[in-house]
Image 1 (cartoon, helix red, strand yellow):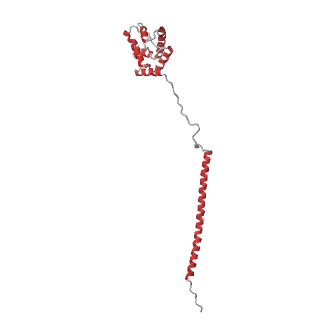
Image 2 (tube, helix red, strand yellow):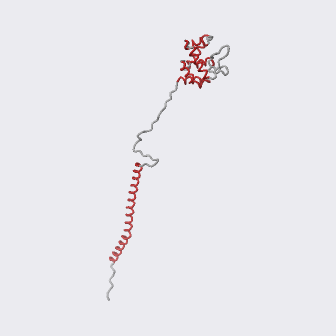
Image 3 (spheres, rainbow, N blue to C red):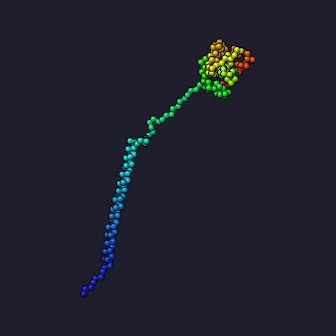
Length: 215
């Protein structure tokens, strides 16, 4: 009888080692290939996304969408702020402030007082000062006469006007024609004809004082 040869332990170990390596190679190779392909796909996708972003940015500058403004620099023509200055006659404001201080009904007619003074060559303060002297700026006048200047008052009665405006125009014209044009050019001279009975020049002193308040 022939004897059965004993198995070589070294050969058996080598066999199983090689088999294990083959199994590991077969198992890991697809995984490695899949991972590599996925990485390449992700990188390619990122590149495409970046290209799309750049392309959109370029399109936005070349053809901006409605409601979106893109400036490479500041606008060529910046907005300007325009200023309108309204010139106001300081004399009218002086008279208005004076009338307001004494709560005179003539307050709203300050412009008319100055306009008529210019029209007839009078000091712009004269008519207001006479009204202060004669009627405390229209607060003490005969009822319904609108006569703040004691104009035309005599023993037979008192001259009346239909309005303060009519009174301003009538008295301004009367002072020009009956006084200034005839040489009565100062309050002292006007007094000698306007109210000659005024004691010690009180009327002229009062008018001058009120005119000085409007400087």
